[in-house]
Length: 211
Ligand code: FDM
Ligand code: MG
Image 1 (cartoon, rainbow, N blue to C red):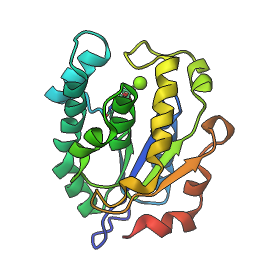
Image 2: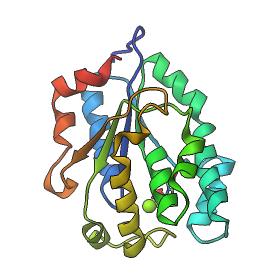
Image 3: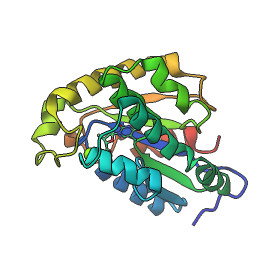
């Protein structure tokens, strides 16, 4: 195991619609980094294990109703409550692969009609990723994949809206509001590959690894 005591780990975020393949790709990336001897952990947001996360989970499974702004702030709070742990892990040299982050927060809430800038505000000050991989799958294709699980946002028409807001976030206007720079890479639909091609190349990995 490479412990990288003098360099921090990388913060790698996977984003995309529901059923876009984030979990599969995160796991593949984790195995890949493991095989290279890098210390890496897989995280996800929402983290449903905390008390904030349980409120989010109840909302998503339609067991509770919340105002759109309220649930937005809970998603953000769920990232804030993990911020210092995240920072500690990164400083220790552990790379974090994170399944959903602030981009989900903004894309999903904006798709409901909330103001985009209002949605971004509570994210400012969270750790900015070194790399954001967006799994670009057509909403129709995602919907075909074994069906959705029945959670609140798992509806084709809504996912179409979310996809548009994700596209808008690729614009660099969000750069600089977080701690480090943000790069958004578009990947081919995951159905056509085993791993994002950028992540396969160790030269590419080195380009963001030890910052
Ligand atoms: N989601 C996720 C949001 O609306 N805001 C957020 O900040 C995050 C992290 O929650 F539909 C939405 C996206 C998805 C739902 O996510 C649950 P998972 O990845 O399916 O558990
Ligand atoms: Mg889901």
